[in-house]
Image (cartoon, rainbow, N blue to C red; front, side):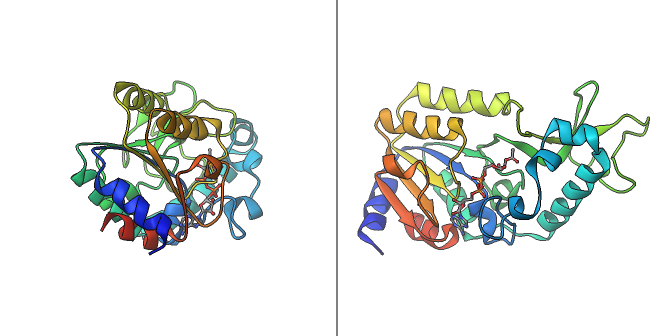
Length: 243
Ligand code: OAD
C-alpha cells in the first residue's frame, strides 16, 4: 500500500458522511468498454451520431442497434470488486451518496442503494413525443429497430445525450447532500472528469472540508485538487481502501 493509499484508508475509516462519484472506469474490469481510453467506445464510434438527439433523429434504428449491442454487453457483465467495495462503504457510513455517470446498473447490482444515475439508464426507455418514461422490462428492447410502443410510438433510451440536461433528480440529490452538511470524504473513481458538473461537485465537496480522493488509471482535471490521487485499477485499489 502506498503512502497515499494509507492516508486515504484512514480518512475513509474515520468518515461519517461520504460523497462518491464514478465513471466508466469502475466498470472497465467488468468488461464494459470506457469511452475515452485507447480501446474506448469513442475511438470507433462517433458520439454525435450515436449519443445526440440529432443523431437519433437522423437514424433512430442505427442508434438503437448500438444501444442494444451495449445492453447485451451489460447483461453479460457482473459487478466487480470496485462496485462491491463502494456498496460495503455505504453500509458502514452514516450518510452516503453515490452519483454515477454510468448507465449500466452495476452499482445497484453490487448492493449500492443510494445511487443516482446522472446520465440515466440504458435499461429504461422513454417516448420521444411525450417524454413518458417506461420502467425496465415494460417495453422489450428487441428488433426490429427502432424500438416502438405497442401502439407504434417511437421510444428512445432514457439516457442523457450530448447537448441535453443531466438528470434533474440526480443533480438535486448532489446539491442537497452537499448543502446539508460537509462530507468527510469525496471519492471520485474512474472518470475522465471532463464534465463541468463533476468537477464542480468534487470541488464543492473539497471546499466544504472533505478529503478528496481520486482513483484512476491516469490523472484527470480533478487530480490537481485531490488530497490523494491513487493511480490503479478501481477493482484493486477500492477493496484495499475499504477493506
Ligand atoms: P471516460 O471513458 O471518459 O473515462 C474513463 C476513466 O476511467 C479514464 O480516466 C480512465 O483512465 C479510467 N479508468 C479506466 N479503467 C479504469 C480502472 N480499471 N479503474 C479505474 N479507472 C479506470 O468515461 P467517463 O468519465 O465515465 O456520457 O465519461 C463520462 C461520460 O462521457 C459518459 O457518461 C458518457 C461519455 O460520453 C454520455 O454518453 C452522455
